[in-house]
Image (cartoon, rainbow, N blue to C red; front, side, top):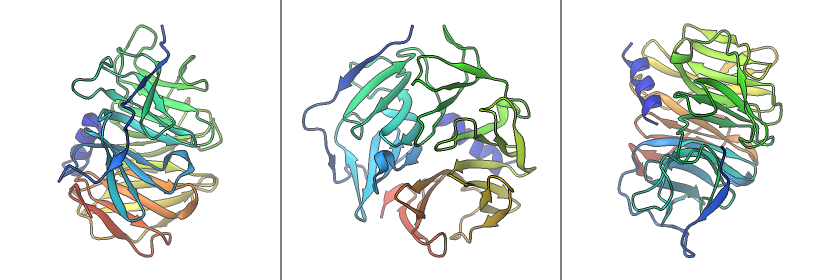
Length: 305
């Protein structure tokens, strides 16, 4: 995500259309052909699966059973990738040679990217900031450029983009946000990471209150009763779990990560919440299966491990 990557650098240095587009019949995940994975735009565990996915400038990659594979086609530039219980939502740009329009608008897939369902703004808008409630499918997007239906700003949809509600976004500077998060089941609870800190909303995005302030925050995730954010603090990177009601915090012990390599995406395994995976700015990916007591690096500077 180009804009999000830019924010990472700043932290370190200071109408509607529906339909489907199907891939070739032999769509599958194969041993990685790419020696180095670049430009990661999202991460998660779609479809209540133990498989961990990353969305890149060159399609989808999957880590399952301790090995990496990549999609052999539909190598789209998936921006704003957000997993949910039936698949994933995304935006972005089609691969070279595709018959899909550019940009993709709001899309979803329920078969690991084999079929692309066009939901809204097809050929009109690319959402860099997009999040979905894992169970509810509630969508939250930050629209950076106005289109025929939406002005710039924060919008939510409970019907996969058929209707949109603009949110007031009080308490947030829109040009300083880094990421969005929607509670898995409660459509009214959302969060934003920003250069000014982490912020929580209990009214769907109309008003935000600080979780922390003054700590540039690069990523945020919401779970049933807790959330996790990552911030750049002094010369290091923090990963912090907080209670949604009390805001009480607990900091994870992290592997050695330098301040010029902030955490950009965080994902829970929906089947085992002791398993947490995060992606850094420089394309390192670490996983814990015991709530942060031990970490394993599964990608090093974009090289699958």
